[in-house]
Length: 542
Image (cartoon, rainbow, N blue to C red):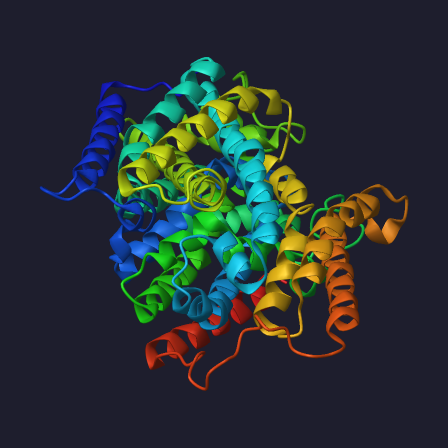
């Protein structure tokens, strides 16, 4: 089954591809007489304005995981999955106010570089290897797999060819141009992403209402599936194990959010490339506002698909009852690709371009950050400390290419995973608690020692695995495992630090100045507005 692409759909999609490649290669060109250096390649010459940072943060974040995986979760469990998006808005405010000032003041290229300045080269290397493995085998591979699945479902192209095509598309401009090419094309990608997603949402809701419009469609969806509109799941809900009620708001999801938005190289890298701290904070604010509308783009279509599939009258009107690839409880991740086939000619091309934009922009971001960590934290540390600009940039390109090849080989092996968004969160959650504990104590507790941080990082994984496989019901929701692992890891670090330093401050502890966390009136007003909106949303959909 293909989505029934017509000539105009292909024209729209090809025009999008040419635009992205053209802009990416144009901004990547070497200026006359200037050899691209590490700051140019990895930090876009530290020249990004706030609107490019905000757009790039969202484009890097929203990928096939969200369009395919989160729509699948919307189909399977409903609006509750939107907590990832709405809580991310609040997390971004925290990152902008309390983390960014320290990172930018230290002039970082990479997050592991902060670990070296605060702790040691040994711990930096341990975490750099953690991240490289996570990016290649979980993030890159899963985005390629989900992207391949979408293209196979929509266009009938064999998944392996689809995966290779996506990889080549992302590589075409990101390997040559570095972060500058990634960030500036992200500005275009996010327009396609949001508008294309909203078009799909509009048409899905309009279809449910039989052409009566979005408001009528939303009301009908709410009436047909009221259980899909609860943000806080009851323990009796089959999906409680993935989203454990009120603990989503006060428990383990904070671990996932703070780790992802605060200490994840491929996210934080575009803020490190800002013209200034204030510019970075304005970019963070824009991204936080965009996160509030993302559930409209990725979750609501999944819920609408659930209502459509379970309403024989709607299916009959669509002539969809005999179609292949109809989503089901066992194959929820087919919800978004299935919806695309009902879009009119031309709009299919826009919606598919939105999906491709989400996939390719995330791939490009991950590739750039993987190469940044390998080049700056591994290659320059252990292989060639005095590498010149040309050599550094070339190693960055080669390492990104190698990472991409490995991910292409691994991606098809992820076949058979349903609700892939949840899978990615769960397995990232084995590594993230230890990293979060090290960073939080390293940033805000001056007594934290290097040896304690190393032991904490290393012990966090066996702790996480033990909690995962212990047959105790309280540990069954993996968010609980993340929260408890983080607390236990912090406990280990605090005890060992006190034993080593006898309660004294560590010599590398961060000293806060009076104005370090001072933010502009614009940032404060924006942050307050976001908190009010979030309060209203949770009160409405409790």
